[in-house]
Image 1: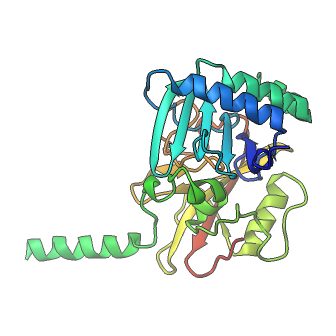
Image 2: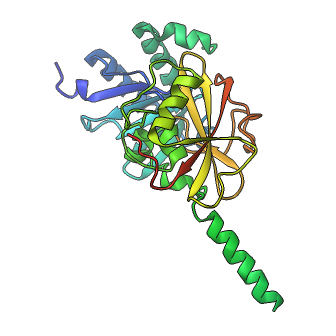
Image 3: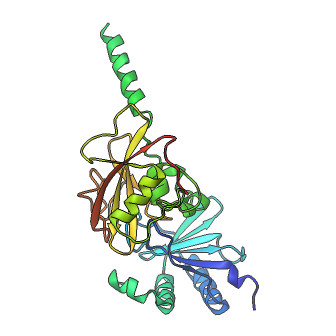
Length: 120
Length: 166
């Protein structure tokens, strides 16, 4: 077991007042995410994501374990991947479909009905 | 004399507006601790507690269901005061106006009226913005595109030093 794996958290950004659903993924998911992130960040930078809305706003992944190959945190929404390292933020096209991967992850955690109600 | 009167009027207006928060999203949008740990209730009350504040939690009267009555009661317990949306909060106390909306059975959301006369909000742990779901400037939360937050509950005054949230 990679001791860093459980220090990654995935937050489904969907609520405004109540806390969002959040979970710590298993090692296999962390490794897959790492691989997808490397693919996306090898691409060209693009403009930032659209302004936040009420309802589904994508995902926030926090790298609490400071896995060196991943940013401090990253968000993905409507096809835009945003990597945060310290005060610096870079945006990339989500060519590796990280958002879809995380949506599937969420559906596997009993969040399918919530997402379906929002047309996702 | 005319200049003096203009200066005097400006000073009075500034004094009345001193308690209304300015629209300064940069104070909240750090893509880090402040942004991720303060929600719409923190933003509306203009209080950064870093606790994802919940209506009624600070006063031991947290909501038990997601509807206008329960969430509103929790907020009143924290010190917010209901007010007609079409009137102001007055200038006797140092207050600004906020509005509560509900995604029935799922979640609540708050907007606040800024010094520029427009409304802004912070959808959860994401960035503060003055735009609604259609990308329009929010001039009235009752008519703004609020996505799934379809129920408009009402307005409240947040008065400086009289509201405690956690």
